[in-house]
Length: 230
Image (cartoon, rainbow, N blue to C red):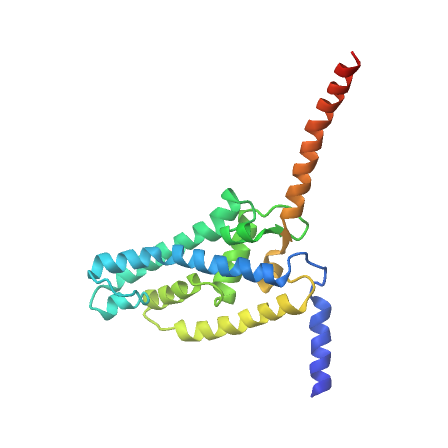
């Protein structure tokens, strides 16, 4: 049994990427925490506001099922879920596409970004595959928006799938976390799916800034030397 497990481990190891990554675990965790908090708050705002407006209550919002549980139409839960997903798309797709290239706000504050495996900037297709298909749907346990997606599916089809999908998502997310920790590339499943990786931006930006500064300073320095000779 142990030999089979060892053989399986080496097979899995051989098909994973072990190219060293300059984004260490503490920095990645810090970026994830920021995204979980900021993205989670932004994602849940529509549901919170709709809950207060429809029910007239000021207690804590729980989930999309609460509208139907309180005697209101389930359509309120469906609309709230759709609005929550749109807010999540804004944060996890629009922001890294248009505002901070390759970065959510959390990644921007933590100092790293998403790029394609060949170091090219990420485009809309890559972000949709990585963020929506990979993180929101397949992994399904890392971000709050995944909860709303499962609840929305259950409400829309009148068939409760939330619990089972959550369990599957937790297992897949655990595998993804193991890949991040155990491989030198620190690439998660969603990175393999979208063919992306994480890179630091601080060093590159500082190098670009210093080179630009040198280009600007050098001509002035030469001009000053010429004027002194005159």
